[in-house]
Length: 185
Image (cartoon, rainbow, N blue to C red; front, side, top):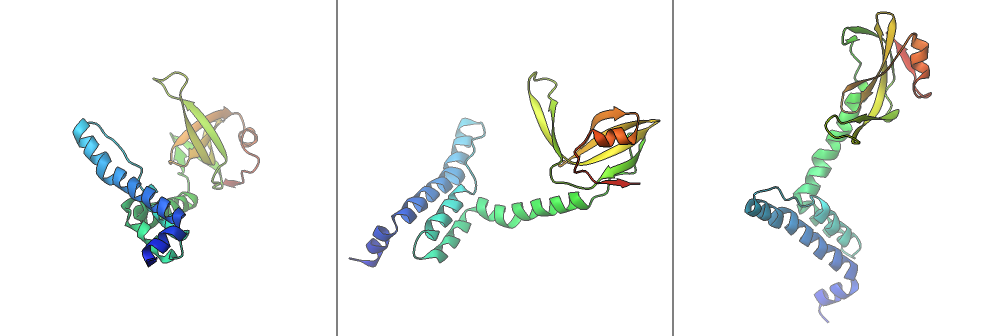
């Protein structure tokens, strides 16, 4: 029995995953662009899946170092070397960013510390009744609006959302998550 046929018989899971990975890479980077050009509308493959399948395939075999071939998929390389580091950097910047002194003409009097997920707010989409966008609130702010206090949410896309209006700062604080730690200006 030759070494190649012995390897194939011993590593059937590797063979299946590698073949699926090659198929996914071909579908994403060859067939989907060709179909897009032919049909005139966008057709998408699934970037990084082929590389992940190839890496998993070789990790199940006796020659694990060949899992590095999964990096040949540009989508996986982009995800590992650009996408994930940018995501981490963006979260770090969002965490260290201080809120503005004022918002919409109202002075910010207090704000909460950063938290990855205080709350989720659903806002209706104007032209689509019954449809909503979900915003993850990472920081709360309280703005003095001439004796009335606006409670604002700051989402992970750096947007301010007016949540409610109250007569005192304490009522604003009671309207939000108990885990919010407040900082005075």
